[in-house]
Image (cartoon, rainbow, N blue to C red; front, side):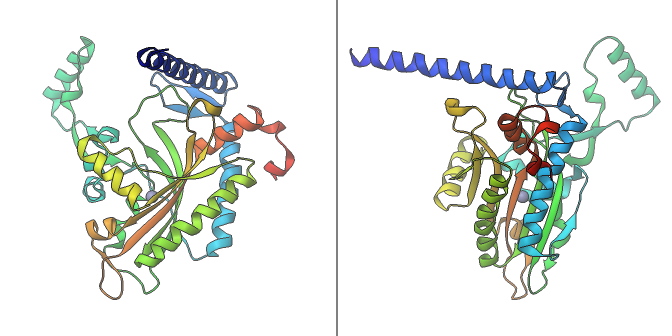
Length: 321
Ligand code: ZN
């Protein structure tokens, strides 16, 4: 076989693998919908959840909470933020620089009666009416920890801060794969303090994350990862993140060997990024470092459904206890 033949055969089998993966993802989504675990909408990646699905989320969260309590006692501040937060805090996360394509902005109508009548006329005519709306000063939350940093501006307590945060996140990436939802929940433990505190937090939670997943019956692997930074500048950010070993993902194979697996937990060291942009300092006056571990609740639930089936009431008792 010539080199040209070999590469075209390679390309063909790669194309088959992609097609198989897409088929498998669509099949899994259809299975989740047929079992009434997820309620589809007219938009890919946006689902309602049934009581059975929420019972899975609850049992996962009980394990996450137990790991948090075992590690930190009652020292973590429990914080719950709405899925919408102020645009000034959003700007300070710098998310717009790295992931403009994943953001979600809130708009609203602030016009007068005349403008309202025009808007309704456009809508009746089946035309676009979005340009009648203007920014509301709020954005959808992209990562559960993002709304937590603005309150820390200033000098931290001597031991820094540890926060337990659970909330909905939004990322605009419509997909057939049920593991890539546009709205999903993350349970995070966030440490803000010295450089060493951030390093220790991330590495300790890598281990704890693996043991939480093992408790739930999931075989996971820790891999050094990078975020999907946008554009050409993003490639450099991604390379730096890998080289400096700042992000670890715990990956579960939802689709066997068809892909490299799905990240269900991520542990991130932000170094002094948020300390800098939110002006957070340690008692000695240096810029604070931060790290967070995030449990992707829906993805872990999907991993368990792959393993134990679509009827959680029939799952082994030790999981439900
Ligand atoms: Zn986070």
